[in-house]
Image (spheres, rainbow, N blue to C red):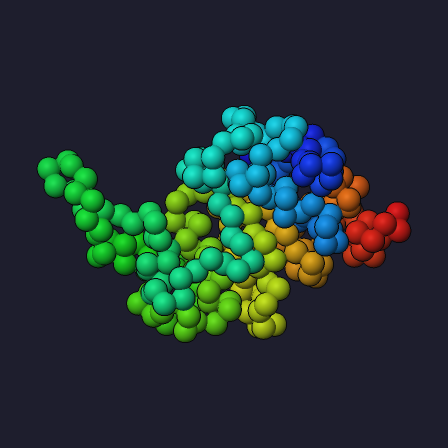
Length: 244
């Protein structure tokens, strides 16, 4: 579904990525791990079009998207859920799910440009129901929800637009223990729908529960790409810190 081919990125004389290659299939979860400064965030920004690669190619289902604008990449089916979630805390759940992409009313086949609030609310309720997310209401302000519930809203927002790939940046970092399992279950739900998932996480216990493969970055290169069942947590830590 997504192929990263020899991606390089320089900021002036500084080489941040020095030829990164890996792939993720439909319905597969790849965990990208590495210490701070390994190049994880830069790579994700290249995939989503925020940064332009210095060299290499990003392929989405055999279509090259290298250098494509972020809005177009999103339209093509790549959704990124950032660590800060980028939610509007004063708006309700429905408004956050459709933020900037609200359904509009049509009249005699013409788009009126008027937001269809009823349709948006119905679709939001259905998406939350499908996810099995535990939210009191789609009318509640997002700022009044727990961290895990807010993560559910961010995932629902991504799913509403039928993504092919979902990138999640540290989705469990700030959650209570009981909320972490719910988010991991949501990742499993994404996989069951045939969605490719890229998980960036420092929590290796989470990685080993949901990831099919683990890609370790160090100083801008892939130093390991291993199936989860064929490696150990100790090995992954060794890759991250450079003991291997």
